[in-house]
Length: 110
Length: 122
Image (cartoon, rainbow over all chains, first blue to last red; front, side):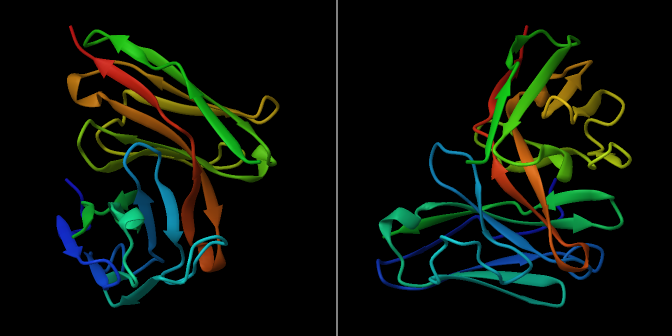
């Protein structure tokens, strides 16, 4: 099972904001940068956020990332129907010598 | 355009073997570490293995250690995953993923291939 814990689902109306938490420990989130991945229905995942809060080119600023201690958060503002997807956090775990993903969160636009 | 194209997936019986390949193009393959990540049907992402640029550092998830072997050929811009002693729980889509390195050794995965399905069933 994953060592990073996310809520199974979050939902909000179009235009609203959602936040997704990712809880870990001192050997993973507390020790390394966090990245976030979006997986739309069908296609492969793609990176949304890297190094806790940086966005690759092409990712709108509606997506933001933050980290505090052993927890990280992904925020999505101005929610759109196209944002309906599964979202995963990820980071390297120093104790496991392994990359670990979060349990995943399904975002639903009401 | 950066592209990663996996191949080699299919149906295999428990205890059998399969070799996955990933053809890379559009970037200098020999400058990037690479990874395999899998996703069982209806489940989340699971990192499987990673290999450094010159194959010096190799890591495996505990779930595949001793059964899977990752390798790369920088001359052919290819990544492979040899999977032995396959189990039903290895059934998944396997993604070939490029490793990106940032400040202070941070890393993230970008881009991902389209994936190849491995089904382990009798």
